[in-house]
Amino acid sequence: QAEAVRIADDISALRDELALRSAAASPGPARVAPAGRPASPAPPNPWPNAGRREPLATFQTVQWAIHEADLDAIVNLLAFDDEAFAAAVDFFDRLDPESREEFGSPQRLIAAAVAAKSRTGIERADLVATTTSPEGPVSARLRVSGSQVKAREITLHFEPSADGWRLRVPAQVVT
Image 1 (cartoon, rainbow, N blue to C red):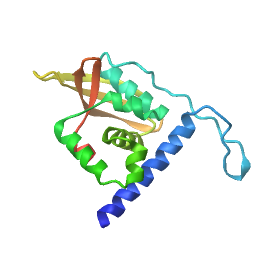
Image 2 (cartoon, one colour):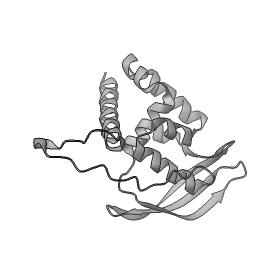
Image 3 (spheres, rainbow, N blue to C red):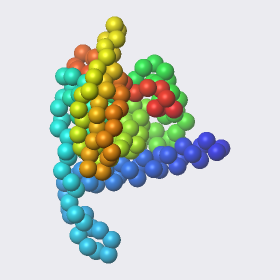
Image 4 (cartoon, rainbow, N blue to C red):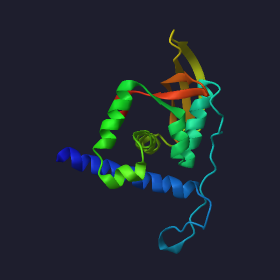
């Protein structure tokens, strides 16, 4: 029961975060701040939709899709190994029917979690180094920075696919 409460809280937080990101990314009527003051317009997306021709471009496109709150684009940029996919399916299957209908698939649920949990404020990413494995995946060391983010290096893993590179979601991220 405690696990069900935690999952319900996580889903609620994901919905709130996606609603905020969608509202910020959507053109439409002006947003209103508390006390009826006009809200500042959503900041422009600092990331390009750079495609998936190389790992750095894929990272940039993931950031672009997160900023745009485009779950379908995020899903198409992610790769799951068998263990991660099984964990995503298990998590999705434990959701209430309304949440399963809302997210539609385990991949969309994880895309929502990736978007909601992503650090905001990253404005730049530079490729530091790459390591290629014989099977094709690439580990990319990126230096990320931004006006509100301390510069640091991160390592991400990318897999080749028929239509370009995908960001690999490890099982520990799903769990």
